Image (tube, rainbow, N blue to C red; front, side):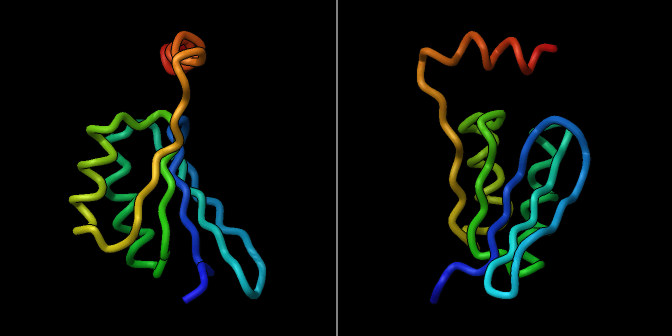
Length: 95
């Protein structure tokens, strides 16, 4: 089965942005705190999303909670940053 429905959850502000073509659709959900990622992921799974990606603002703990909350229904990946980016990432999320 080909990937036709992709979901992305990003921390920052609350919004929902669907987009795509006839062959591929993507739904981006913005949330203000990683704890809201559980409901967002459940919504994506209910919408038939086949793959979920979490932004780098999610810790491994929150990623695990989300994966468990959707009962492993679809693969969940997490954007990762190397050690050279940690200080700059930290500053972004404290602003």
